[in-house]
Every structure is written in C-alpha cells, then in structure tokens.
Image (cartoon, rainbow, N blue to C red; front, side, top):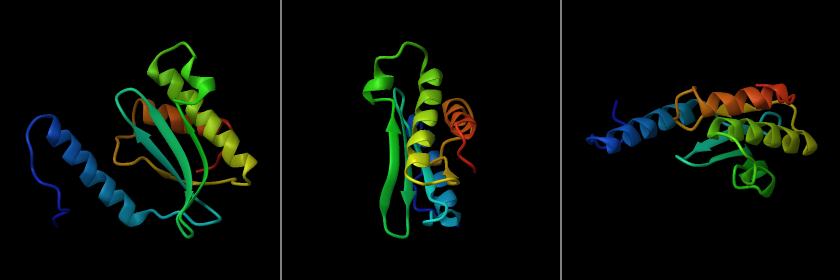
Length: 127
C-alpha cells in the first residue's frame, strides 16, 4: 500500500518516514466536539501543541514553546516540552475540554513528545 511519499536518502528519508507514520495515524484518528484531537508538532528547536475539533475545523486551545511565559524559561528542550504540555492542558480545561485523542504527528512516542503528553496527563487532561 503506497502512501505517496517518495523514497529518499539521508535526512529526507527520516522526513519521509515521519510523513508515512503521520498519514497512517490520521487515517484512524479524528477529533470530535466531545474528544478533540491534541496535535503535537515538533521541530528541532520548538514544540507546538493544539487541541483541534475536526468536526468544525477549529482550534480550541493551543500552546507553544514560543509563548512568552515559556520562551524566557531556562532549561533543556525536554523541560520546555513539559511546560508546553501543562500549559495546553490548562488552556483546554479552561475551554471545557476534559479528554482528548492524542495525535503525535508521525513522531515517535519518545523524548519530548512523551514528555509533553505526560505533563498534559499530570495537569488533568485524559487520553
């Protein structure tokens, strides 16, 4: 079964593998108004998390390592990912969201992605 991602070499191969995983995940996961989708976007430097209701196509809550409260903080990238997870959970609960479906965006569930998810769980978000 082809996913439409060209085979590549080097770093492009890793990006292609991430894209294939992302397509495979999104076939199965969709956010509803009861359980929106918690989307994690990871770059080499920053983390972004959004709670998205796919039925109407709106972002309910979001947080990023670019936020003023997190950007000036000291610590490693993993620590900032934990802060992003706690912040997005706090904002989602303020918007009335209790539980979400986790969309890791094709990234492996390890490192900063897992730290963000654990911090969101500790802050009271269910998934």
